[in-house]
Length: 284
Length: 164
Image (tube, rainbow over all chains, first blue to last red; front, side, top):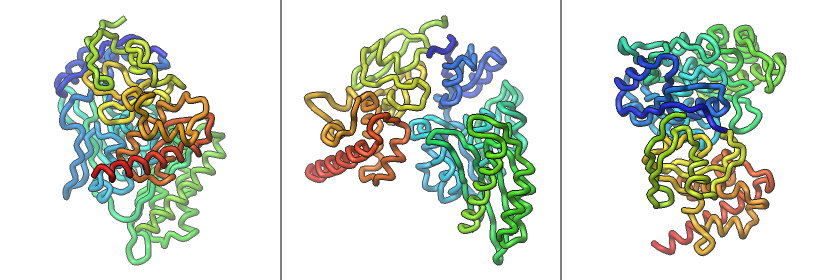
């Protein structure tokens, strides 16, 4: 498999990246680990005449944890997330999710930035970041701006990031309470048939707050405020679980593909969300 | 055709320099340009792991990396791990425990396993199955691959203790 020819750039600083993007517009794309883009280029489903490799850009591989929250550089890999004990202590759901992405070789290369910026509905990090109410920092010709994860995804591969902007980091407020990332997949390395990210805060035996987002059940990740609300004030009993699942099912919009027909996906989404809530609650 | 780049690689301890189009996939660089044919092409779609090599300390599927990305990197293939006259403990264990049948996936398996044992010298069966999940074997059913890696770990730990 031979991709179409391209000019290759490996700049050392972001100013050079932005200059190349400005010069070549739609014909230029940035690449981090390349494990989404390269397969598409090999299939000639993506044509990238000017390919900008970000690997030499400094300061984008850091994980910073302080009182304000967690900041993860766009070039941090899934393997970095799994190996970072401090990050796991601060936000254990990140490791739980990263372990369910692809396989070891892909996790060494695949990055958080690529996973969230690509806009592929199958990617796990977008839904996870919506659950955690993360904010993405992008930089472009007019400087930096921040975009909430819950407002970032417009359609499959369409996001609020402009073509001349680069996603540089992900910021997460310190998560509290119990957590779970639950994913149903056909085999190792597959995208989710359905996946759920859940954070729950418990107080006095009942649910004080909850955050629920679903993956690969629409052409964008789905943050379900209604499903979250269905749990608040309850003891997360069977009735509350039923209500949360029903609310989530009203928010998703899966389509039929080789992972199954719509009815099956809705069924799996319900099973997965129920499991995720029960596990998150048990840890709350 | 895009213009060729001047590429430098260190493969199995040997410096290599050549001109290549940036779109050349690393697996082709290794196999066709450098005649290092241990890493195999199985699926060529990032799934099977037959092309696994170690690049700057990471297990990577070399069908999913452009040679341009690897410019300046250190690459280790099965040829750099051991050969007929100096089998690596993993190679010895795969032979001893029938960790292969047709052998096509084996270079990728063993290359990945070297890194797995480096990160986790005492893996459980579950650790091995999880850590080897990026490598597919269509012959063995994995049982003997797991056994081989466990045996190699025991052997390597004993050798390390004896050396200390």
